[in-house]
Image 1 (cartoon, rainbow, N blue to C red):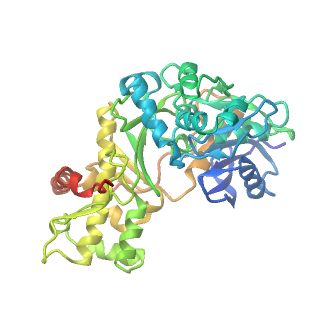
Image 2 (image 1 turned 135 degrees about the horizontal axis):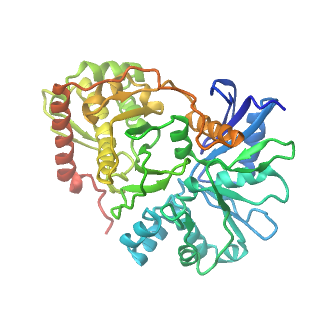
Length: 475
């Protein structure tokens, strides 16, 4: 079998995406895609069906496969390896009360020190607590707990294989310490009502999980954010801002982070380093929702935003349209401040939506800085990164050079790069690109001053708007 080709799989919430790459250069030679069912709980077999559909006819000549999956999901298996219940995904919020309870029981300082992150509804540990409380008979049947990428890797290896994971994806469970590289069985048992199911073996970044029955090497795999960092080949000082349904801000670090405020999740990455990450709930959908309100297409929305002046003539938009996670305001709603007859224009509203969304991400950048991460430049990815208005405003709000890499499936590319790394058995992953091929968008001195004013107004509006933007409590 030729060793020139490797495949990367991105098993996300919505679909399976496949890229087949040249193992030496990273050039993408084939792609595939298949949809996943909607919902916040899914039968894992649906991921396997999508994998088979997406890879149909694409794996000829492929020597190694890497799988990156959506983080945090809970896959429970019984003694026979059968699925106990449909997998609960990261976006299933039924465990929100469990997260609150776990946080209160052990305290934020203990959680941050133990696993680098505070429990939130997306984390596996909170889903296990929910299952123990609401489905105790099913919980009693659970012999093993896997993450989505773990389950797919295990299924790919075939009968009799040992389930494995990597430290990157394991760091999002709430019962694995990135700092020590070990599971916290005590936290698992505490959350799961004293039960201690088996967990997958954690293997190194360049280790192979095994081989498929057809002889294809399978790498360790990882979580989606970790794979994106690997696909982008992040260097120290690089910070990714991803504008998808939600917004994420993350960068690589040589040291583990532990933020007791809960703003920064102290994840591990897929190379042996660490990946501190902050998340906002409101990103690209702020733009689509505002363009829908203005009854314009996104291209015309961009034109409106670009026609307004920097600072939106004093109009400030807190775009907490789905609540917010950074800052932690789950019951907040969107709010406009500084509205006057003079600035009540579609142009200013469009510009304020862009500025408000990016100020939320800038708060994530500040949180990473507080954890000791250097921010030399921002790599802007995701669907929202295609907006011309975002390109214009981002350097002003972020205050550092902004690079917009070529649109690509970076999670799948990162999984393929990991597969090439395992195939080569080298100490470092292969270098597939020297840089991201775009000219940085550099802020000027005037931009720095304007950006400071915009962020200050946004912070002042947030303080003023806490009482206004919170949903009224029921009697």
